[in-house]
Amino acid sequence: MLSNTKLLIPFLIFMLLYQFSCKTIKTDSLTKKYAPASLKNDVSVLEKVSACMHPVYGIYHSRHFYDSLFRSFSGSLTDSLTEKQFRIKLKLVAGNLRCGHTEIIASKKTIKHLRKKKFNFSPYLFMPVGDTLYMAAALNKKDSLIKKGARITKINGIPADSIIRYSRRFISTDGFNKTMPEYYIQWNFNPFYLSLFGRPDTFNVEYSSGNKIQKIHYPAIRLKQLPVVIKNPISDSSYIKLKRAKCFYNSVGANKKAFVIRVKAFSFVGYKRAYRKMFRKANAVKPDALVLDLRGNGGGSLANSYKLLSYLLDSTYTQTLKTGIRNYPYRKYTRGNFSFRFTKFALRMLGSYKHRNDTACFTMRIKPNRRHHYSGKLYVLINGASFSASGLVSAYLKKRPNTVIVGEETGGAMEGCNAGITPYYTLPNTGIRVRMPAFRVVHDVSPEPTGHGVIPDIKIKYAIQDIFARRDLEMQKILELINSAQ
Image: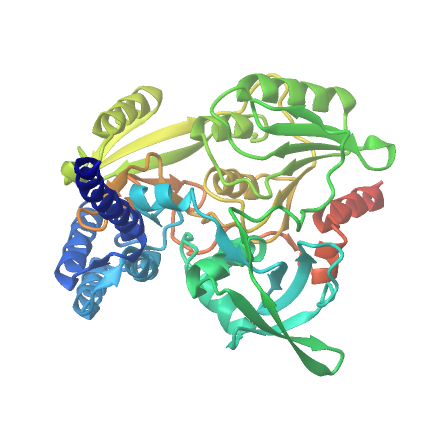
């Protein structure tokens, strides 16, 4: 019996040490600090990769600007930082690339750890409109301590307008566009705020009630993620869904004289058959106008976007993809070089190829489709989340006769973007991943940089009451225009 006890005590000590070490390993990905030398090394890798590869150099800022930017940032790293602290700083620096396809992403070990955790959230959900913050919903529907629509002035001592403006800085966007950051902060404010400002156990909120400022103190709740409580405009359940192609269509309005095609994303499958079906149907019903809804469409397949345009453009247009690299630089930090080389080969087969000033240029032709082509009145709906391929489509349709663009400026730039294929580089010390585009996609309808998205012909602005009522102001406006034209 004594011998068994002697064996048991070391075993228990071993297990306690093992559990402690496991706990330390688990928290390391969130709490581990990296020395300035390690952080500077990661910055150096990102700077070298960007200088060799990123197509944006010389578009919105000069190469000298970026050299100074990275040098200044590296010099500012004098203290040890956690991965998150460093990632936040790096995100602000990368924002100066003015590229919506360039993203700073947490390391794989951090994401793996975070997926298992519950987090502190506010039981009240907030929504900004412009620089004003409102209480939009309570997770407990019976809770009415803060009324829906109340204007929030401070959260934990920080002015609400300062929180909103600071949060917008972390949304990557093309050029100097402002609608894309505003859109994403509006619909993702609650997790975004907590990720940047911390996850307290309690919240102190100041809000305006009539002419008085009220204060409320309440505990956080722990959840893996927030449920969807704040909803988009009410959608018509009669729309016919083409799931693989991520499209919807329907005839709407008085006498069904508006034919609506809603493209949620430019999928890589099913789109040829979907467009053939929808445009055949559109021409058969002979609508007074066709409505193409690209709101919230973040992009996808270029081939898909070309096919859609072929049904709507009356003339042949071109688009050019440019790259200044033959292979991915610093390949020990990334993968997928074969995919890049294959993409260049495919582009060369599908379009024309020229080499200019150390830059490979692949020009694609967008030809009108003969069958089921639509040449009538067209309305295009866009907003700040119309990005990448949907920005491309909007830019070309902006030049189309008999077309009206309705909504707000697209997140995708009028002149094009940096995309085509986007590998991920892993920084050697922190493991932070950087999404780095390999091509400059030039919309030949607007070859000169504007720094802005496609500007609508009719601008639509939502008030908080419109959002709460789930109104679709763009569709309302278009139906008014169609009815008044009859």
